[in-house]
Length: 138
Image (cartoon, rainbow, N blue to C red; front, side, top):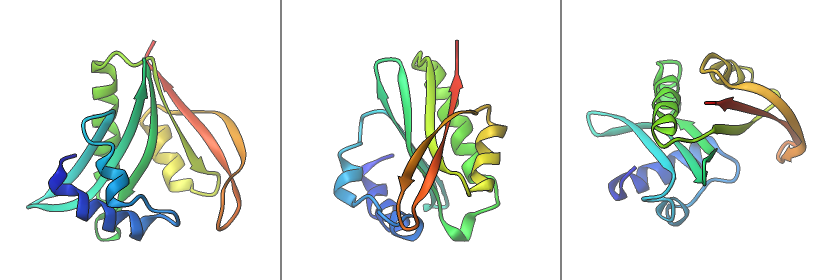
């Protein structure tokens, strides 16, 4: 993720999430963690963000433009994030996903993430539990 991507990513956040990250919030992540952008011919298709603390990774957002969904962008982003997490020596990467989001759960499971618990009422609008999924590299 680079400075030039921030306006497009902020717009993508508004398309994908009830509580989108602002351009300022995205800017604060530059140079930290693992933040990757999928683009083709200069057009942003999606991104994945992962904050890191010591040897732990926490996926913050996975977003793909509605125009590019079901074309493999999210799968490629997750695969590249996992490769970079391993390169950095992370012990694991974890994420939360809405319990009702079957396509996302299948995507993460296909990448090697396994359910490890739930977070009650983690999401709002509508209120919903989060499934906590983790991939370990040990």
